[in-house]
Amino acid sequence: MDVLLEKPWLAKYPTEIPHHINYEEKPLFAFLEEAAMNAPEKVAVHFLGKELTYKKLYLSSLKLANYIKGLGVRKGDRVSIMLPNCPQAVISYYGALLSGAIVVQTNPMYTERELQFQLVDSGSKWIICLDLLYPKVVKVKASTEIDHIIVTSISDYLPFPKNLIYPFIQKKQHGIKVQVTHGEKTHLFKNALKNSSTEKIPLEINPKQDLALLQYTGGTTGQAKGVMLTHYNLVANTTMCINWMYKMKKGEERILGILPFFHVFGMTVVMNLAIMHESKMILLPRFDVEDTLKTIENQKPTIFPGAPTIFIALLNHPDIVDYDLSSIDSCISGSAPLPIEVQESFEEITGGKLVEGYGLTEASPVTHANFLWDIRPRVKGSIGVPWPDTEAFILSLEKNGPAEPNEIGEIVIRGPQVMKGYWNQDDETAASFFEGEWLLTGDLGYMDEQGYFYIVDRKKDMIIAGGFNIYPREIEEVLYEHESIKETVVVGIPDPYRGETVKAYVVLKDNESVTEEQLERHCREYLAAYKVPKIFEFRKELPKTAVGKIVRRVLVEEAKKQT
Image 1 (cartoon, rainbow, N blue to C red):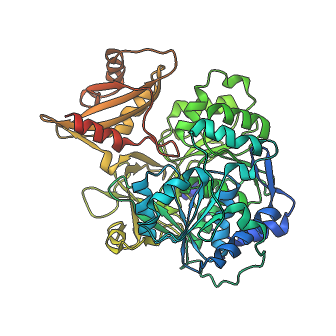
Image 2: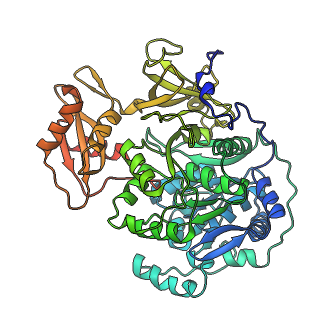
Image 3: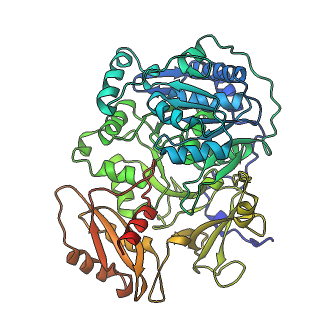
């Protein structure tokens, strides 16, 4: 069904951004090979004082590829990687691809139950993990197909003397010291690379058909699903990103890697982007406000992909003005709605540009973004327009076709970055597409006459109270305008009379105080009475995912248990 006869957003493109891109049909790992050949001595990775050149990164990846091939890995096998952002995460990712394997990114914060499910569902027989996580992997190993465990430590890639001190810090912070011995089924990462071959493994890869990645969704609507992303999907989305950020200078950018690589956003806009663009990754294993500010001042990143909670946390640091953040030129925020006041405050402090983008795991992940350097007035509250070769429209909730401009419906997408489907779930795959080719995002929004898209809310998060449709994001935007609020999330909770009622969870800024009555009066100034939260709950923090996305479902489940 050709529903898009016109694409009004293309008229808004700066001349530097092409409407169509010719994507290279090659394996994702080919770009690391090219970077190692074109810029062998250029720094690819900076990690807490340790640096790896592109030549070293590529050779290390080849060594790992040959080592796991010796353990039985063949093309199409799944290799799980359970690591924070560190050099080993990059080496493992590209090493697995160079062996012909499919990468299964695994969240280090998974519980044993979540880990077991993913390992069983993916059929992984090999896993690369951090030493701190080794006991957890061992506990679930017997109930999975895992045969070999490769173990590494943060200290493996720390400079002297940090590498000697780190084990003591680790024991103090986590209360454990893990001792792992290299053997037949358990392997030390350092030993694996020490004497392994750097010979390139001959592979026949069909980029449009062969999978590079199984990326599991968060499971917010039930059991997590493995999103099948091909080499071509990932190459296309990274190439789009480079064309969107057209002022980037190849080989000269420094990209701050706080977003975890086990999340598809960080994997694409930090790791794959840096390698395809021969740029430098500045990695941090976890987000800490103080460490991040010091890293920006010392390492001077030019590109800072992030999530709203990261920018909010930095802005709320009492000494942020004492740090030099002027190196930051461009930031794309994703994973959650970006409050306008956060956007403007961060731009004022850094002098760079911060814009909101949009995407989902099933699209590798980015589909929309605002223009970074457009001289025209900013379109506030919009997620921007579709990227090159990305088609999108609003599917009407009333009719089985495109909505009118400004009519709320579900956002649907088609493009070369859209997934092949869900792993071993044909029915779920079929249900996620409209007419077999348009990805149903589950997000409610609308498109204006100019082609700009706006998110209203997740389809499943919409609150229906007394027959009214209420969108939490609208209320959250109003609450964020209150000077005392640091973070907030709005949910619908069961109500015997209205069906659902509106509840707001609020985290206040340090040394700020406000009452429920004051927040209610604030909301009544900007919202219709039926949208104003009936309940406010103050908390010290909100539950979040690894990328800082507030987990609304946890709060909903808590509220249900209390009613």
